[in-house]
Each structure stands twice: as C-alpha cells, then as structure tokens.
Image (tube, rainbow, N blue to C red; front, side, top):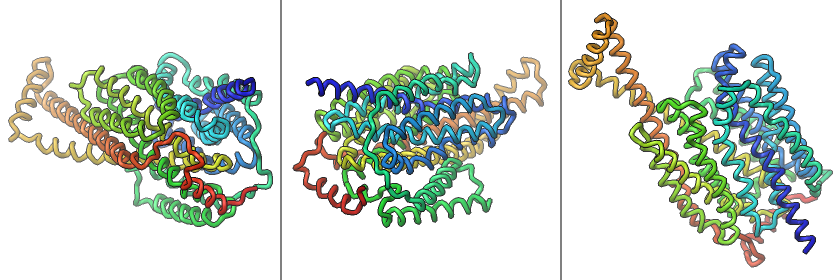
Length: 529
C-alpha cells in the first residue's frame, strides 16, 4: 500500500511538472501575436519582417518535433525534458533582451528549439509512467494546458501591452521555467536509454527541409506570389524531400519517425480524428478573435475576457472527459462530443451584430465542453494501443502530424476568407449604382446630413461614397468569417463517421488479439536495442 501511495504521488507530481512546460510552450505561441504591432513600432520594421517573429518560432518547432523520439530514446525522457525546458526558458530571456528585429528572430529560433520538444516529450513521460486505467484522467489534466493556453494568451498579452512593458511577455516565463527545471531535476525519474541507437541523418535532413519549406508555404497561404521562382523552388524541394523522407523511413532500421506505427489501426484512426479536430478547433480560435476585434470593436484584452469562460470550461471538461474515458472508453464520449461541437460551431457561423454577446459566450463554452469530451479521449485511446517501448516515437509522430494539421487549417481558412471577402465585396460594390434605389437613397441621406453639418457638396459626396464602401467592406469581411466557420463545422462533420470506428474500451486487454498481432508485426520490423 505504501508503494502504491508513493507511486501515485510520483505520477501526480510528474504531471504537475510536465504541465508547466507544456503550458508555457503553447502559451508563447499565442501571447506573442498580440505584441507584434508593438514590436513593429519599437523595432521600426514592416509587417513583412515582423511576421518572422511568429514564423521563425513555428518553423523551428516543426523541424525539431520529429527528432524528439530519437533524442528521448537515446538520452532518456528526463534529460531531454529538462534540456528542452531550459532552452525554452533561456530563449525567453534572450528574447526579452532583443535590440532589433534580427536578434529577436534569432532568439525566437532558440526558443522554438525548446518549445518544439516540450510537448512530445511531456506526452511520452506521461504515457510511460501512468497506468492505462488512469491515463484518460491524467491526459485530461495535461490537456487543460493545451486548451487553456491559446485562450489565456491574448488576454494576458493584451493586459501586458496596455499597462506594462512588452518585454514582460517573455520574462514572465523565467521564474516558471527555472522552477520547472529545478523540480524536474528533483522529481522526475530516469527512463531506459538506448545508448548505441543509430541516428537517422537522412531522415533528419529531409524532414527538416520538408517541414520548414512546406509549413512556411502553408503559413503564407493565399498571400504567396507564385510568380517568384523562389516560392516554386521551395514547393518542389519540400515535396521532393517529403517523398525521400517517407521512402527512407520505411527502409531505415531505426527511423527518425516510425511510420510503421501507422499499422496499428486504432493509433492511425486516432491521429486522423485528432488532426480533423485540431482543424475544427483552431478555426474558431483563429476566427472568433478576428470577429470580436475587427467587427465588434473589442480590445485584445476584452476579447480574451470574452473567451475566458470557454477556457475554464475546457479545463473542467478535459478533466471530466478523461475520467469518463477511463470508465467507458472513447466512443461513448466522442460521438456526443462531436455532435455538440458541430452544433456549437455551426451556430457560431451565423455570428453577427444581431447575435447577443452572451449567446456567443455560451456557444464558445458548449464548444469547449465538446472538445473536452473529444480531444484527449481520442488521443489517449490511440496511444493506449502503442507498445510502451515505442511511446516516444509515437508521440513524436502524432505531434508532427498535429503541427501540420494546425498549419493547414489556418491556411485553408485564410484562403477561403480572402476569396469570399473579395467575391462578396465585388458583388456588393456592383450594386452601388444610380439605378439602385436603396443605394441612391442611402447615398443622398448621408450626403445631406454631411452638408447640414457644414461640409461642402463635393466633399459630402466623396465622404458618402467612402462611408458606403466601408460598410460594404465590413459586410464582406463578416460574410467571409461566416463561411470560414461553416468550413470549420465541416471538419467536425468529417470526424463523426470515423468516431464510430473507435473501440469502446478504455483499456486494452490481452484478449485484444488484433492489437497484439499488430504490435508483434511492428516489433519484428524495428531494431530494438
């Protein structure tokens, strides 16, 4: 009994330690976005250059995630977790000391090296130490950080930018990070290491080139100028590297990303569902703040406060969903959770000035409840089918695919928004003619009001036209957000039929012959030191 208590204490203290790193890494992805205009003014740079503050971080994360499985196997999860948390914290310190845009971009790359390793390594640690019958609840608590950080980020950043020094968005990581490093050294246990594990150099080079080039192109989205030969070369090189990477991984005795894990059907299914859910989730995380700030006129801090109840709901229902998963498995949670997600996201696709704010908040809360019942249960169900010695490789693979799916969702939604916005604006503008009675009356009304206020006739006509075209532009932007939210709804709809293929069990048993056979087949194809 004493050993059980000690083991239970170790599990929950480890959970607390790894949540620190996960929360910081994800928080930093969203907290910096709000500060970009401030940095543009401080460093006196254009929008184009300032975007690299974000891009350098995300691209570095994309490049380093695939290698974390090897590093964890080679050096042990404790060492790699401490190293990644230390690099991230030191990167934060250096970012706070930046003196120009180039130093900031370089230090963000250092920060991204640590941030990219934190999530897959922390997941590997939890799956290695938490028994299957408790994984749902433990991963639910861990998932609170992943869900809450993107919502808390804009609120916290807005407050810091409005009332404090912008450099605090980086220095705030220092005490948390250094405490996390100390606690990790004191509390975490060493895991088995494979000291003579071979490094897949070809896999590392090709995955880095493919991830950096393709994620960059996806991040640029519809703003890319395909007449530039550099962009075409990046696309060709990225795709070619991806093909070489896949071929190499399937033939290499110790691949960087173990693609043979995809032979485990529940694991592959969970990755597909999780990727689609990420695309649905980040759609709203990306679109609703745009609406609240650009259309409804709220400040970044007010926007964060509006979204805060949904962050709290996500935390509560992540833990509850994990507990229910341990009892009932994924499918009984996934199906109703997806139905809730579809309902809430589709309802948000009708967002407008006529929709009361409390309704928007309620729909965001319902959506967070749904995500609490879907994201962690489906991920845990898939990982439960992976042999314990392959957990580090599985988390590296799943996080790599997650990074790609998030980038794809933002690219798809921005491209759709821009296309709809341009199409709607052109259609509305075509109706502004002298033959359109409504437009003509509106124009005359605005012009007369301006002339009564003392404006000359010619100035009043010009101002009236600009006012009407401004209204048209706002309506076109509104329409583009509504259409993009419908696309986010479709992502959730795609996941619904796949949910019925998920197993109903929370814990895999020895009688699950199909999974055991798959595990044996995989182990036969892998060199285990």
